Image (cartoon, rainbow, N blue to C red; front, top):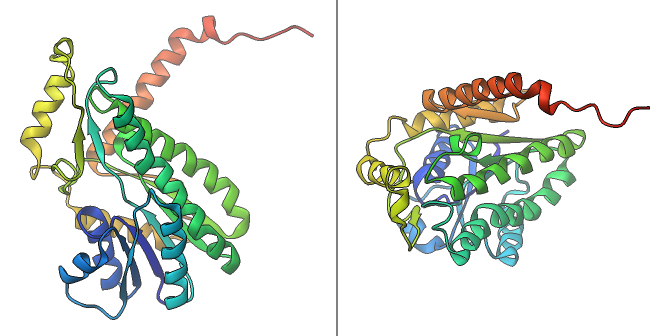
Length: 277
């Protein structure tokens, strides 16, 4: 039986690529976008694709979009929480409103959509929640700390969800892509802090230069990433965490090595035994 996918941020970038891959596999796609009329006009009409209006920051819209999907197709089998954006800047440079807006979309929006979809998955006793994170959701780095903080939150949410939902027949997986050739480094997907502090030129400044020169030059093919996601959804025992791309695996392995080294160095000092008796 064809799966019904509910994909946020499905009008462009990775969300659109995942949607096309699911359709090509014979599945049904509910594409949740801010402007469904514009999104529908940009792609050929497809009998197994439905566009719904959704700003993930609006919980009422999330509830209405999930209900519309179930009214049309009877179920939601796969939720892909893909909507989000990046913010480039040093931790100190980020203004309160910039950071709050970032979390409102990347974290609170993800939670709002998940709350809207899970009642239907619980009712049917099956489903799969896929949360799109990043290699930065596992290991943070200079210039990306604020964005990575949102993805660290997504990682923690997903790990707990996987444990809470397993007895209900529902899976949860966090996807950690490396640098794929999507629109992430473009203006519409990557915000930049208003204030730049000169003292961070050697660290964050270098990251800004990297971002300026690498849009469209990322090594990863989004179509291959979408195929990995299809395989994860088809797995009998889906993983909780999936790094995707050689650079993502290298980052995970490097962090593991660094953590192991610090554990070994500080074990005698920090592994206190607590109160005796």
